Image (cartoon, rainbow, N blue to C red):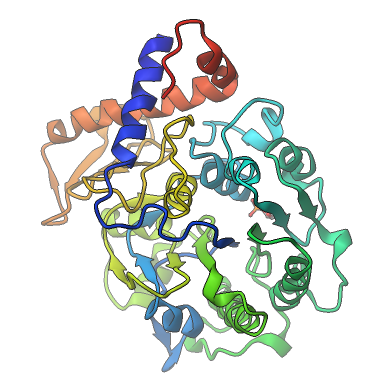
Length: 413
Ligand code: GP9
């Protein structure tokens, strides 16, 4: 069994090293600033309401960045902590609960730890209680040099749950300027958290018929978070970080608003099961490279597990020695993305499981027609998806990484 798991990781490591676009190590030694934006979903990127763009700063940044239009969150019950865990460790979150809370003391190959070993100063930034999602313990275990929680920030802009994102970014940049370069900084925003009740003073959108509904308030919160993102970019330019930093911005999970009628009204069309599933599971990913190269829209399927391997690729650090499951966004070849629910896509097929989890009761879609197709076409990838989730669960719950790595006859991935 363990040999099979090692083999699986070895093949995944080989597949990640197939890039022929010259990006491996192209940004060696750059700083990395990753921003995980609260409840930031993909459906309103590039969209307007009452003639006003909802995410004008993100839209502008897209012109000089890589934008992944089929990027999925892969979270489960651990929500924000799951997005964090999958992105940093390139493993799936658990079927129940949060890895941060359940297994903070187990071994993972994490991005901060690997970058630390490669001479980076690493920090996690989040202006909320350090104990929430057990971050204080988990971040130590993940190998961060620093964890800046609420007590390290001046509460000079109180919004929603805590400090407003604008002040959060401003103060985080000051902390970063005190760090030695290259640095890896991971920033988690909070102002666009449910129930999206920002004070009238910071609401800048006319949401029309959505005014004072939770959906309208959500759009307002995202508009504010986007304005904060714009200020972060300006701050990076002002502080001389823009040309030597990879900026990686993505959403953590959906907004918990499941009313289909809201999305239909907003998008102005009826939505199918497939549309709704994509809306609730896609978050945006934007990667700005220090020289602004490779900008464009990338529609290959991608997901949160891909962050650590893709950043390591750009920095010229091989992921072969590590137990990571995600894709390298820059590798050649087809990509396969598995969600925690067992849904998956390879860019051609899209499988949506049924509530009873019986394979045959789920729906298999052909993405070229967006129509349901013969369920049997999804069987082989379904088996692979199940296998991946099982391997990840076993690795986490039984703390297998040290054992796999030190096994007498261990062939390292
Ligand atoms: C709080 C924040 C919220 O620190 O990360 O987490 P969520 O409730 O979205 O999982």
